[in-house]
Length: 368
View 1 (tube, rainbow, N blue to C red):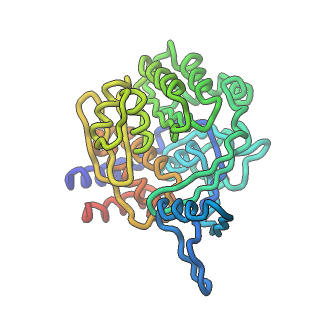
View 2 (tube, one colour):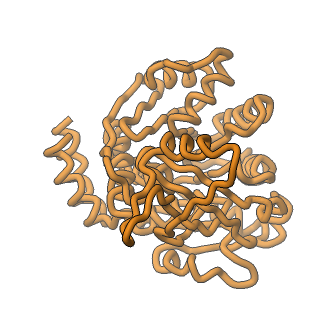
View 3 (cartoon, rainbow, N blue to C red):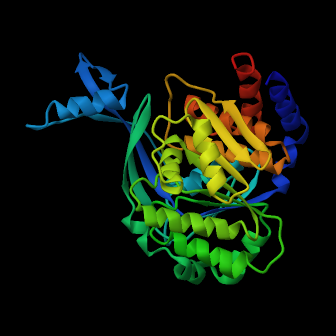
């Protein structure tokens, strides 16, 4: 694996500058995230936070017959939504990005202004709001998603025009379609992009899908969106990425039996054998597994014991993997890049620049 590290580092040093020659289009959500920690105890001004979800849930259950008042402390208020976070991460690495998202109407909300130096924002509505309660082992997210309910293919065409949408998508090297789970109109938009833009056209675009947390969706809804993704596979190369919980849920749906207790490699093998995509990726806090027609690949994550920020780590993984694709790296190298970008983000609380990413890889290789 050491050779892979040095190959990736050398590629970034020699060809990373060329990332500004590539175009990625991303859509279609947008949120303002308020990231908070929950206080377990507070004495003489010294606050101790809940470190695990288990601790937090047990604390609440012990008070199920009475009131429960928990102090929260805000860590950061930031851009949210999978499309803006992914776009921002790609833009900071030098990629030209068109982010079609709900960043504010008639003007873009101030919190999204940090993106404007490295991305072009095409705002199609008002952002939703999330409260992300973070712990060392994960997060609980409360989301106000109803604001996005009116965003569908027709409203998107009315706001941007079909000609502009065609130009953006057809000049893209990668089209990233994300957050199907929180947008009521996502399937309608995805069908529109397929049927009115990509179908019956020639192009080499890769379409990158991230459904996000769909555990609240019905089995029938999940099957329908998988069929839609498979329709994309008939006209373009496709990638489907999920996190560990989503991967287990997807395996339960498409494989017809519980994946509980199965190793990640087994889950990836089972899902890939049943879902028609070119690459299937499952990323977790400790490792990433992917499958394509040539086999199954595993790469350890840059595990951070005390994460500074978790919300958006999956989007940063996606950004790193996309950079690998754009620079024509092999799948192992692209997975390593995804894990490195995510690791830097979780450790530092922000997405890396190209220089940051190279430095992180040079340090990580000694501890891999």
